[in-house]
Length: 320
Ligand code: A3D
Image (cartoon, rainbow, N blue to C red):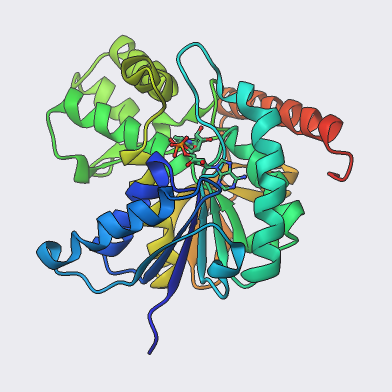
């Protein structure tokens, strides 16, 4: 059977890391696409030359022409600009919206059957626009944010509890921004929910609140340290987890920005919700019932995403 084809639209910090991870995991042959001439070709050659030591079989190619993504099974989109210190994700909206238009048209023309994972910020509004620009079905266009936000939460919790990250599960829902919603009740260590661990004296409510806030600020903390851009190792790893779930029909339950049609009280927009990803793309959304305070936090986050969608509509009248 031929290897799957993975197209990475954007060959910057995340794009390069995606290519390296996809090769090491032998997920398929890889095309790195970018408008910058030389960057995708140089990165593709560099990563290909890591193959003999790592021992992977994957054809790696750089491209500046959308024709080279033809027939891709998966497209992961990071094209656009990233944050610098002092910028919010929302500051990227105007420039990245234009990028989504050209990317959407390129995918529609050359890879209409792909499973598309968007990473470009501001995430929830960009994936919503990308779906419209590409015209691909909603269940085949998804945003990566919840896996990363949950991974950050899991990492901080594992340090607090001095336990393996593998045994920490966590749930971060809502929009990928300052209003994201880490849900303590659905986050566990070895199946024990966080509120129970507070009651057991494993941590205090104050410490847990601080970890939740650090999770919300997780991206900005890294931007502040790097000074030249934003996080890329963990964002790439998170998107690869989603791509692998699709390519191997793993039916993983992962929090993703998915198109909601009434689930969790949301209709006609993308926002972070628990989903099942398998060969059918987004196969299911878990319509969990939240408590009144949780729902209020979630609704606030949904409203923030709707504000960004309205700003997009003002810039591009074709969006509905
Ligand atoms: P960066 O290293 O700047 O790479 C972006 C690449 O996009 C560059 O190589 C550009 O040349 C390329 N590009 C620009 N315009 C186009 C275009 N029209 N077509 C094709 N390629 C183009 O950024 P990065 O890789 O660090 O981040 C990429 C995006 O991911 C940014 O918008 C970040 O804000 C976002 N991001 C999202 C998360 C989430 O969790 C959602 C996390 C981290 C970064």
